[in-house]
Image 1 (cartoon, helix red, strand yellow):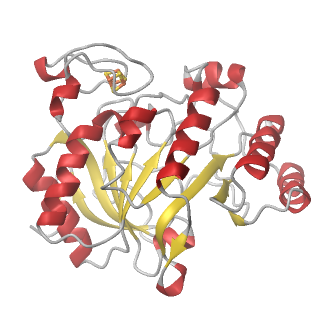
Image 2 (cartoon, rainbow, N blue to C red):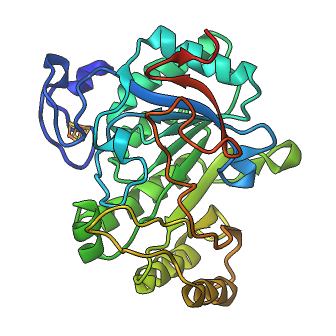
Length: 312
Ligand code: SF4
């Protein structure tokens, strides 16, 4: 399957580089699977985090390059290291042993073939947890189709449906049309939302949207699209954790007036799902140079690219 890294067209960037020969396209990654961190993450939505935390695996590199990415150290600055399929399996199994509710692959689109290989190997090795695919939705339908038999839950973003915002903040003016098609393709693969004990998600689609301060019109369009197209088939997760980190991004947090407007819209459009409470602060911004990138109340580290497995 790694043949797909030759003349790479795995994502909508369609760079055409030969990653097996060490070339890099927009995502900045060769064919080597690189990971930055693996933690038990308590900061995800309740059905994802459960009681013991989601087994989050942070993949290095990204095909989108959002100007305000909180994970910029790994998505754009290259933090992380190459791992073998055996080591990937080991990470999954240790997360399972430590009580993870699921395996949550974060931003792995550009590494889809290697991750499928890794997930299959981990399942052969004893992994029995649901597998989540946590992505930007800037994904090709044919690449997504490869995940049909290995992923149980999709956690796609709909970042915006506004071409100019997509151009300015995500360097991808075609993001709106691609993201919509990607989410619909995920729903074709996982048409119903299934949960188990304690409401933990086992299968389905949870659509995330991060609200950008000063750009509520964009959020309104996304909420209307959700209400008209996928309400009842997918859950909505509205995120208000935006934290200003760069010069070319909104320079403030969501304010109370904006938050009240959002709550009113959710009510008006009859949308249920999850929404964060307003709590401006930097606790959501991880530092992947530390063994635990997040504050201890949000995550328990299990593996990091510098130190390997906790306690080993
Ligand atoms: S996965 Fe990377 S190299 Fe391949 S098309 Fe996308 S951005 Fe380009």
